[in-house]
Length: 106
Image 1: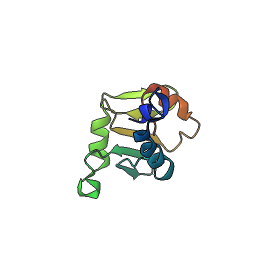
Image 2: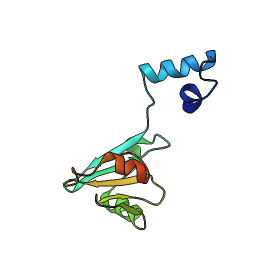
Image 3: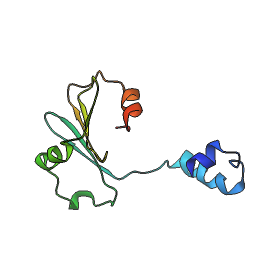
Image 4: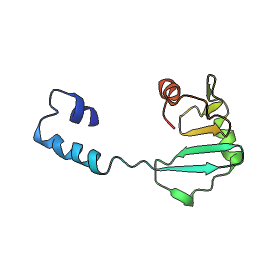
């Protein structure tokens, strides 16, 4: 829908005006959890908006990250399904553009 509202040949149709207004004023909210540890940040996509009702531990997150992929040169790890990401504390030199090209944004 966003593509149609901004980039398509029908973007000037009246029904897409509301979509652009929502994006301009409120953006899109995503449901996620961030777990900060002494080693870095775990980002957890919360598709069902469970919030803090879902128990999350470092051990559970590390288990889900196994078998995922590492973004070359960054030490950023992403689970196979892309729902869990870990960014080490010392990774302030990585480029966000590199992360976006390889899978997703953090």
